[in-house]
Structure formats: structure tokens, C-alpha cells
Length: 221
Image (tube, rainbow, N blue to C red; front, top):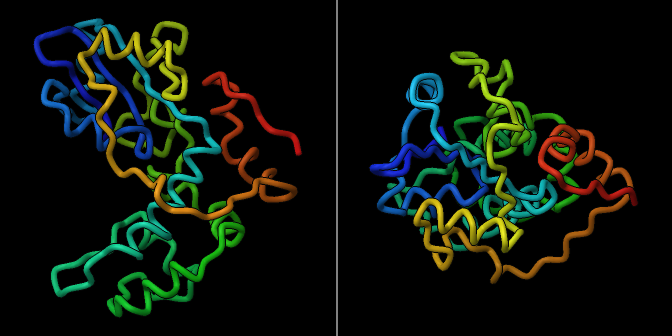
């Protein structure tokens, strides 16, 4: 689960997969903790809480470019290679067994999947993996069945939009995070991604709660 305690400080960072999780994991003073520990910290220590979030459209795009393009294009498909769970959840919708093992066939299916096809599948399975869940769910949603709520109010935590330089400068100053640290960068992959019509509506419907809670503008056309 993506929760981090700042070493030697009463500060907690909550994030989501595809929202700088890997960069945080590689930061020495960010100590990864489980949801149970995060809930305990919140209840008894009353830490300063930072909730790093990402524009839902960019998060959806990043997942596609990483899981459907970057990994299939660059993975060394040897005997030790394993496809990630966020990819495997799509296998049945791609006509593949959930435990499919033919790496070349899987690679081809992923690379053949268009962005529009991905969005149509996302509509059906966004509930099943944290990489594609709405970001707001991490705070309070039955999907996280063991601890359904962290018992925090959005008004009491500092929401950090990673696209906002002022907010990220503040976050770096408060936590010691190195803003130059980048991980899982998909900028080298050139693919035109258009959000229009019914595909835009699908994303708006799935992530409606995030647009409301996290201060992002929802596109209409």
C-alpha cells in the first residue's frame, strides 16, 4: 500500500500507484508503511499529512503508456520475467487466460491494444486494481476492506497536486523529497492520445470523485 512516513518526523505521505510511488520508494527518508500502521499513526500521533495526487487524465494516460507500451516494448522476456498484476487483470478482456504464460503472445496483445480499447476495458475493471482505482478511494472506500476508512477529512490534510510547481516546492521543503528524482518515465514513448466523445465521458464517470475532491477541472468535450 502506498503510505510513507518521513524519517524522524511526525509527517505522513499518502499517495497512489501511478502518482510518484516509485520515486518515493527510492527516497531514503521516505519509510514505506502499511495501511494498518498509517491508520495507527493518524489516530495516535496526529501527523502532518500530505496527499500527493495527479490529474486523472494524466494518470490514465501514464498507466497505458507504461503497462501497454513501455514494459512490452522494453521487457527482456526470459524465463524469470513476470507480467505485473495491473497487466494481468486485463488478460481476460484481451482474450488471454489470467495465468497466460506465452510472453510473446501477451506482448503482442498489449501492443495491439489501442488507447480507445484500453479505456473501454477500464470502464469494466477499474475497481480491481489500485493502479486504476480512483485516487480518493485510498482515503475511504469499501474496496479497502480491512480498514475501510483512514478517518481523516480532506480539509485537514495537505493535497499536493504533482503538476503544481508551488505545491511541489512546498512538499519538497517539508519532506526532503528530491524534485529531480524521476522514475517510470514514459516521455520517450510517442503516441497520440486523444480524449474525446464517449472515451472522455468514461474517464469522467470513473474518476468523478477525484475531480471533485482533488481540485482538477473536468473536460467536457
